[in-house]
Figure 1 (cartoon, rainbow, N blue to C red):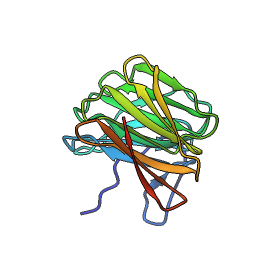
Figure 2 (cartoon, helix red, strand yellow; figure 1 turned 120 degrees about the vertical axis):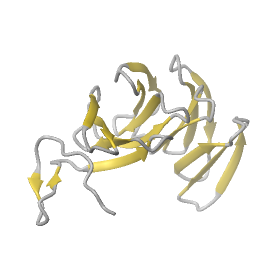
Figure 3 (spheres, rainbow, N blue to C red; figure 1 turned 60 degrees about the vertical axis):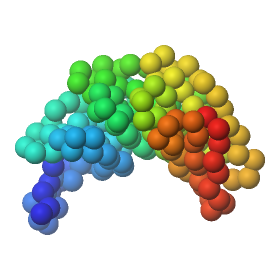
Figure 4 (spheres, one colour; figure 1 turned 90 degrees about the vertical axis):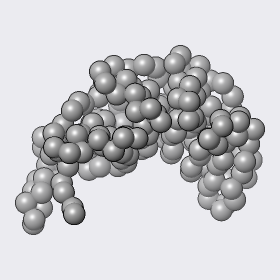
Length: 176
């Protein structure tokens, strides 16, 4: 079963009649319960869609550049988005209110993820992995990978370690 979920304003219809947003979907994720889909767009917006009805639930604004990565917290109450402007933002998924801004990267944020308890966020930019407090936006620690650009990262389920990987094809495990 394939269904088009969400039709933002603007863009053109493709040959099958589906609306193609002007700047396209750049990243997306299901909520943990599978009832919502969050999408990041090249037009700098984050949109939440109802996965059952295809209705747009909410739109979050607040960036000067495209969304590069997006994730729900494990309880589905928050969303974190990474952006080409070097920032990441934590949003309240129910209200769309900005919880905090994670500022400290110098270029685009390639990947974001919550810890399983939702208290921390991991983000990557260039050769730096950062861990943040998801409530305040304070940087908890910064891990430098001297070898190559880091493209992805994640927390272990217990939150005690993080894993990162990048262009060097190596997977590195760090103590969080």
